[in-house]
Length: 79
Image (cartoon, rainbow, N blue to C red):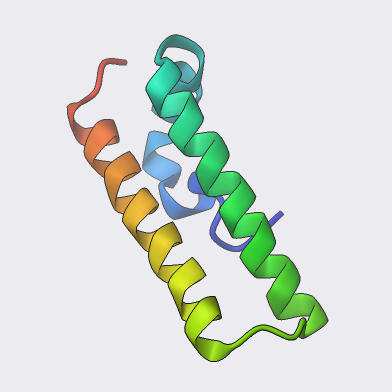
């Protein structure tokens, strides 16, 4: 499990994350995209894969932006 998994990032919203993944197609898509991106970043970090610092920072920025969108949905979404 990666250090930035949604249930770790937002433990107080664990039930709501599960509910929204089941009931909200857009939320499920964002959560899946976040998971894939986080897994990619964790893999690059653990294997010291050759990637430029700029590209790596871009991936981390995309993850942060997606995390912010997910958080806003958790605050405002149904569930």
